Image (cartoon, rainbow, N blue to C red; front, side):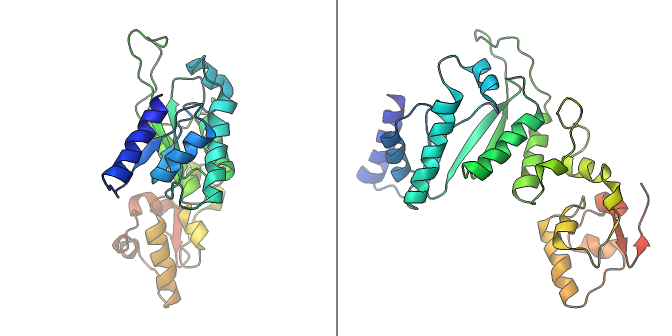
Amino acid sequence: MSMENMVEVARQLRMEHGYQGYIHLKILPGSSYEMIKRAMSLANRVSINIEAATSEGFNELSSTKNFNTDILRRMAWIKRLMKKDENLAPSGHTTQFIVGAAPESDSDILKRVNWLYKKMDIRRSYFSAFNSMEGTPLEGHEEPAPLRTGRLYQADHLVKSYGFDLKELTFEEDGNMTLDMDPKYVTAVSNMDMFPIELNTATYKELLRVPGIGKISARRIIESRKRGKQYKSLEELKNIGVNIKKAEIFVKLKNSYQTTL
């Protein structure tokens, strides 16, 4: 009934009130194929929250829903419908994980995220820290460290936007990332055999592996090199947006080391 009510509100907004703005509709686990199709015909984006990375973790959170049939099967339906008709939910679909509610590591979560991007065409994953609430079955359950979701967002960004392979990321023995440093810096320090790289000859992919160099500054370096520019100082890099405090130990300029770790 809740899913039907949400779709009906969206229908009234579109059909009766002429609303042409952005609508993001939540798809409830277990929703029928036809109801999902109706929702997608009205919404710019839809999402079904996966909550956990594994079926075992999902079972810790719900005793009435099934991970494979109520969540993953519905995601597959959404993907199928989008392929059939590009006008259905043109902004795609997303999902959300509850971090810390189930006994799952950062590695478990990121493996599932990576799988969803490849197999379900998910546009984006969101991470929400678990909060223990009185009067619920998980009352008193330990809450995750405040920085954990932030590190997951950073790691997800490296994979989704920077083209990192999940195998490149560095995890502790328990499968979690360290909270002390961002995952790009940790990964670089853990692979110092790759560095320092010569900034004036490095490829775009190599530049993106350097802490302190983002996509914009990497493109600026590549584009300026095509015009004959050769970088000779860290100050020049700073002027194009490079965080030189992070980058200096990982680069060489004209074969000159900038500093040592």
